[in-house]
Length: 349
Image (cartoon, rainbow, N blue to C red; front, top):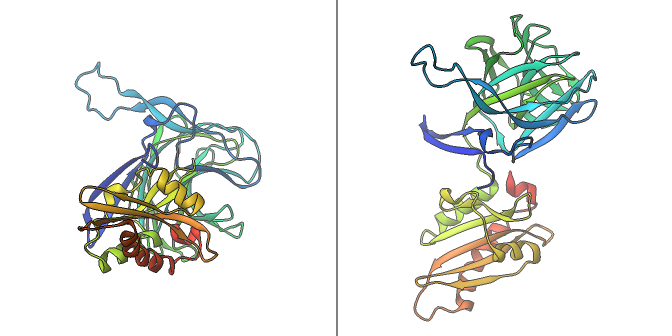
């Protein structure tokens, strides 16, 4: 898999397929950042110190009797930097998906902090100077929404209400089009407001200054955006319905090839092999023949002719099938895809 983060595919919602993404921190080694996240800082100061620890968490099981423990030990995500700097916003950004419309729920706990005790969610983030955030303050006893545009913060919006330290709270955020809505512990705190600054972006965990905060039970229901790689596969398969398989590979953070688009959605995130790796790294072409199929792996190049991805085309074989004939069948498909690709970032977005 691309990471140890749990992926769940849900049923259809309306006319579009909705996906639920759940962050399962129990699979992350203690004192490490979960895979798929990037440690950033907005404003001033150094990035935060994020890691997974074990903490007491309300039990999900109903109490059978008075001896049933109300709390259980769970793996949670914590921010532990105690840098006392004003306008210091540690962010742990999930960078494997760009979200447009979504509903997020998370639990958080304010643990410590001399200058601040805050926790929140940053969303539709473009970069460290452009994003939305909804956060809760223990010292201020409030929940606020605001946006950063070109590094300038808008006037905060939100109510005054108790946010006690040392207990778990629930924050829910809904983003649909230009409408933003939020709930705190089941209570509506940000009535639907509209803003058109950011239509899509990354999402992550947020704190301020020296606030030590924990996060757990984070789930996101969203409609996945279709990347250019996915569009290329879909269009090619539609034009060539007899293809047995079609996959596009990119290199992951460790430099290993992973499927980012496929005729079979269940193959997303699966590892490639030396053929895909060498196609991307060295522009090489590979041919393989099975009992009833043939496969060709070719580089997909950017507008400058540099290989940026690998394409595996799997076709039914026929009597007298040769490597040359297989290449002649696969090459036009890859060239047609390549004509629509300019850069690697464009392929991923």
